[in-house]
Amino acid sequence: MIRTTLISSGLMLMAAATSAVAQVRPAPTPLGTPVRPAPAQTRATPAADAPVPPSRIALIDTSIFGDEKKGIFRYVDAVKTIQPQFAARNQELVTLQNRLGALIEEIRKLRAAAAPDQQAIQAKQAEGARLQEDFNTKKQRFDEDVSKRFQEVTAPISEQIGKAMDQFARDRGITMTLDLSKLLPAMLTAVPAVDVTDAFIADFNQKNPRIAAPPAKP
Image 1 (tube, one colour):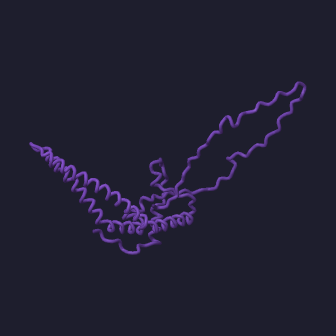
Image 2 (cartoon, helix red, strand yellow):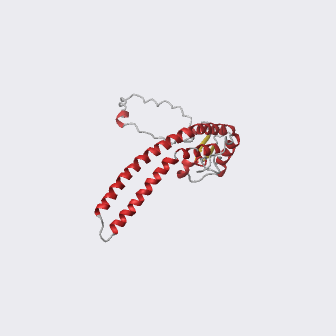
Image 3 (cartoon, helix red, strand yellow):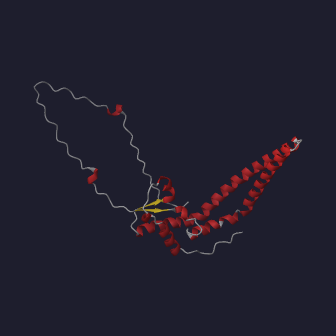
């Protein structure tokens, strides 16, 4: 998937076991012994006095990259090459699914008859079970192969986009880039000026025009 800068800010503090830091009670001072004042402790510099480097945070919505009209053209074109490679297998799954739907309707009609043919119903149920198992097996392999091919096809362009995002940020003094598509559930407010999604996509498309026209839809 598109490489994005993911920011994790969960710091957990673990309290030490009380047995490991047992306090030692000081021995009593003998009578007549003058008590010396405790040495003055050096005042630590508060954390607030430490210099804080300036930072500029920007948001980029990576979910827009795959949009056919507003996204990154090279990424969209790469994804489009995948579908034709699996068209035949996808149609096979659609055919199996349609047959399963037809069997369900046939069984429903047999059961609704005045004198249901139990033998015919059982035969169609057995056929449906075989088709369902065949469908599940082929669907699982289909999903695995599509996912693998997707990674192979999009990996080069994803790496190129990642490097372009780094350069885009450096050129504009951006110190931190957050993926808005991952933050949306937790976002309460956002200043529109910090969203650089459109600016980055326009910059990338200008510097990396389409290599060739995308294949026509079947």
